[in-house]
Length: 173
Image 1 (cartoon, rainbow, N blue to C red):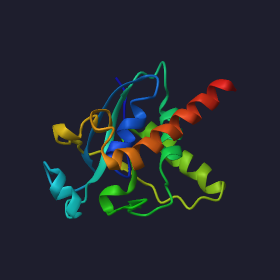
Image 2: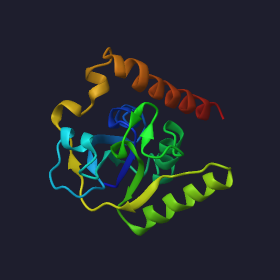
Image 3: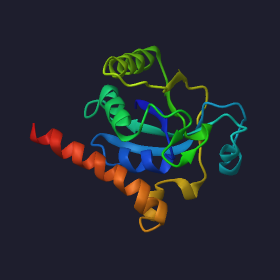
Image 4: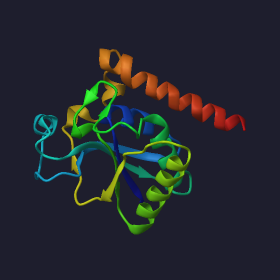
């Protein structure tokens, strides 16, 4: 089963959106891209681990392609913001693609080049996935379990709505 690993702000947002994508079988939130082994949420939030909040997406490539996942990733976060997304500030919120093979690397770099040609100053980091650490259980599928939590209502829900609008518009064409 192919996987994709992306970070772009709080992992609750990416988790909630990618769970709505046809062909995505599972999403696990976690930490990657840093130095400290077996980090926990509190450590990652300090910025000293070097890890980003990321999602590991398990998908059916017969239904959704890696390129389509990349398109969604770049539409639901701002890849021009360095070490932040909105009010979430810190290296743990950086825009990052952690590739699992050379094909994913090439596709990610190609997509970034396309966005740069459109005039976007993309700061998304692209690097190989060394190890993925699943986050604590309470972070998994957080939005579905806590839809009325203020952060979910005012930050996560609008990103999900944005994706669903894009998805519905694409069905019409």
